[in-house]
Image 1 (spheres, one colour):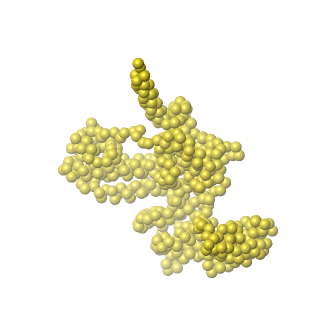
Image 2 (cartoon, rainbow, N blue to C red):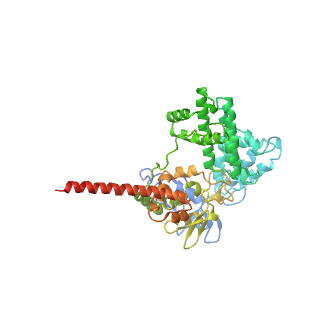
Image 3 (cartoon, rainbow, N blue to C red):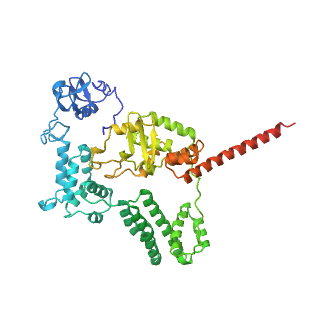
Length: 495
């Protein structure tokens, strides 16, 4: 990624750049004039085929078109003594790719001149083949990454269990992802494994041994069994499980402080506990349902249910303005724009959007369609523009993390899509995705029958029916207020 340009500064740098005409420090003089540092860096990284047929770096200009050194007369050293290719040089007359390869070999070489394990060789090959070698160097030269790779190189065999023994860190999980993505380790459900690790630590927070056994059973026979049956655990399931266990522990510790066993729990206890704390204590109903099924508590015990329908909604005018702005701006990342359109116009959930692959997207000259399950959504101009831009300029092959990625919204972890929470946070710079989605569904229920909306957007009829009822309630409130206003006006005007 090119470094951001500073503002043009004519008083400090009176001479304009021969390429961009802005006033920055001149880095080099070429036949087309003094070239600023920004344009100089861009010239070294411009690749293509010159009019003369030369393929490689095209640093010069001939009639405003990129040209090779011979045609343009530019004097520039871009000949790597390592691989012999034309490329931007890093140091010692060697290109970034050669320096990256040497760095990888040095860090991943086991001590005592032993050969590297097959797993390490796979990662080394992946890192060396990165098309954006400067990104690889930036990552691998971070002290904590360097230390981790050297520690890993000393291991005779690399397995998931061996990685789990190393200190937990983002670097550990990123390298694990690389090993999996390049077939050096078998794929496993990482969220399920993370929940297992987290739950062992969570058990230490339970203050009673008896209650610790109860929570352990709750984790094993409710959450972990459900996760094992899912095939692949979703981020939402992972977070809900953690939240449910956390609140259950809080409830049991609260009872322990009052010398009360779970079997002695009464409705008065529950009412007091819920009244004293935040609304999230209502989540304990999940634990209580399990405790009821396993005959640990009286089945008549209930918590106050969570109120639905209280979330804010984006009104129609704000939605229309956002859609217009997103359809005509180039200041926002095209992936964020593409996701925003699906939320604002079609009321899709972010958790579903992040799981889209390019197999779900069809781009033709006339139309762009996106498929959610069995539902196909057509994007007409200008809503299709960011999708066409993404299809035309894929960038997933630039690093070792996504060599064969088919995700539309690829994430920071190798081979995985972006987390729904991450995309939600990125969209929050422009709008609340939840408020926008609820506003869209609220408005659509005014325009078409529930069954048609549910089928068109891939929602259950019951979900759309709730929005339709809320929309009707608002309309009835409006009509009632209007009727009252007219009655009062009639009274005031009567003789």
